[in-house]
Image 1 (cartoon, rainbow, N blue to C red):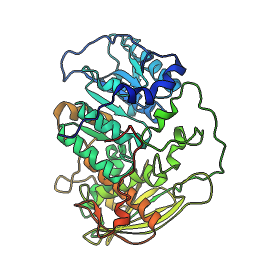
Image 2 (image 1 turned 180 degrees about the horizontal axis):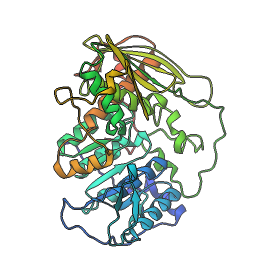
Image 3 (image 1 turned 180 degrees about the vertical axis):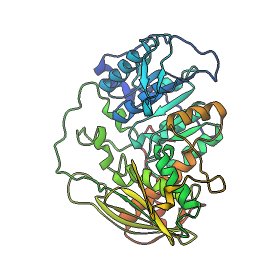
Length: 446
């Protein structure tokens, strides 16, 4: 069994004390209202907690509302303004009988008839302590994914974690191990797998409609850059020390927090991991390499001078054991599969092929049919009930974001690297292998 982390009172106060006093809160809890229980059986209602209530966390909260089998019982965020906003959204939804929420395609689902209220916490661990919580939705900055996901699995909770799954390759493997050891259903938020256009593109390629696959081009937009801005006092209601968590301590700067955390390597991997995790995931699906990875990676990566740290341009090639390359570079979004008899291009909202006949006819029963999901959150719910693996299981999410991390490592080292996808190590390259993990600030550790 993985070692379960424990925290003493001294650690707890070191992390949370200053902001708890600032907010005038009882330790880590904003509301102590009792949630009305309406749990007829484990299959009827799955009780969830949501950690992280920024823009993406609010999207996932609304996705949870649309799933009639889910009941949000608790939310957590280290930013009190986000926390209160999330609690209000829950109260507005659960406080109105038969409130209709429109899903994709205009189909509505009804909220539970019994009004519900949620508890709000600054510290996600208070949610994990609750025996009534079945599952966790994690939408925090990337540098927190590993710790919260592993803690959740070890607490016996199923997990939905936003992409990119991990901050480093070794963290991703820890997440896979925690899910498997604790028999958890773990969905990664690479929701393009639950889209019919991406599925059609991959089925067409794997069914041989473009002939022998020659190469895959994956293109995403480059990352931004800006001039430095001065540090500022910590805003009231934000526990900045807790927000940083395992990352190195730095003074508060508005350009590091919220959506801009993506442009700093201490918290994320830039566009390479942010959008790369989406499109490289589809490339691996079409290539049929969900559970492995490339043998070689080579290319270049550059960062424009300025305040942000992550790559603003890159040109990287992953070569697989079968000789097929994935060419990953920055430009107009999309994935193109090139074959001897044609090609297929796909991006959000668009799929096209040359010649057109490649995708004109539906995939036949005797061709390759891939895992079908039309709703990523609902797929997670269905799998929690059936205990079958979801469409973007943690192993798949880990393998996809591994490509992103490999690209960032090549961008740093600027030389060809040999990768062993079974051992998940570089071959005879100590310098590169030192980049597989990130150091963590105490008291946070696996």
